[in-house]
Image (cartoon, rainbow, N blue to C red; front, side):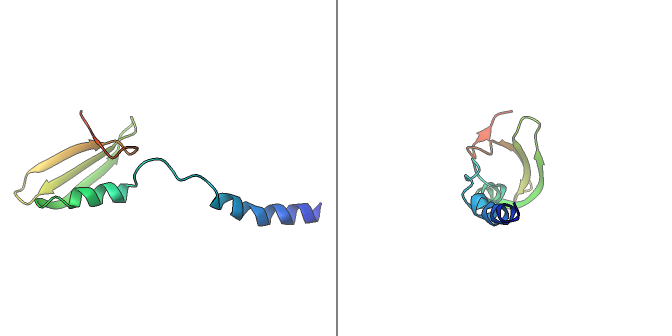
Length: 80
């Protein structure tokens, strides 16, 4: 029994390495794409919507405020 438990604990890390990648884009990738805009100034706020979207508020160099909802699976802007 003890040998079984030891082998089980040794196998757990190996099985977690084989886990599937989560679907979609990481928040850092989405923010990096927004930052590539030449008029981008800074990100003010990032929230998680109850419907499963990122709500990102950022400002442009002109001072204009931009609010977008992003689908984390596709990285696309979702209309409000």
